Length: 410
Image (cartoon, rainbow, N blue to C red; front, top):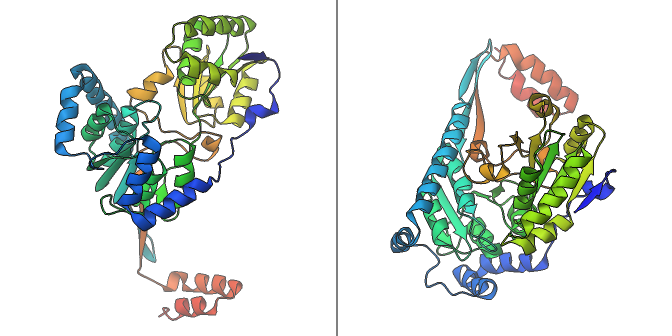
């Protein structure tokens, strides 16, 4: 991890989404061969041959018996926090109707009917991602929720069950995305697919988009910490390492106005890495991360807004001013006690967030992701608008539109 005083142009580079040929092949095969292709690719990539693709009631029962009660209770508690936040989000949306001189106009908010939630499970089991994707979908009113996770772990089965999944499948990778997008003999076809995944899963989501909806295309996870002299080097280092252990491609950056903080964070990182079980992964990530020393916080805010990272943490004296200065991020963590880990698991906000600069134009997964806003109208007095429409249609050269409006004049 380097300490730098100038921002390298590479800091703002966005990892290009790959067009991976094998992804095309797998999707084609699953569309043509259904469950047989899913099983073949599961055996090839995951090195397993599950007796059934779908998790049964007996499988769920065994999972609850195998997992420690403290873990199950933590899953339940996290689910309640996520659900509470999602319910408040849902309450902020309303149907409405507007009556004008010439019409009755309105909007209806309805959920997507069938959703597929992809839960990663390769490097680590991620029951937290099951909670984060299923819970807001259920609160939004989605009728049927399908979950796919590779080599699914007991903790993930329990999380999916507690969050309200209707059907759970032990399958992952491109074959799972294709199965949900197009349906197989066993897996129902969904209307939308959400959830994080590796580059192959991301490429598959991009390819099936249009046939189904998706949340967004996410890449390696990111945290950007902004600190002035009030920052706590030990906590900053801990949060950078916690991000770095996700994946060798993860990014954990610090922007600070204080030379002493920068040097102390480097020392703390070295010390904390010594006892970290996931040290090998974290070290690879930190090699691609950096500490930037800037003249003032406004420069830090400008850099952060241009970077538009997934997570931003603030350890500064004037948190309110800092928060108001930041415009582009997936989720914001204010103050020394607001560890990104809390948001990852149990505080209540969602951890499925935009990466690679996508925070410039989208937020993270939420209740809103699963809702459709539909409008309707009843024209009660066409005379009021027929002439306006006729003039606009004439300007566009669409004579039938013009006539359709004028024929309704009394």
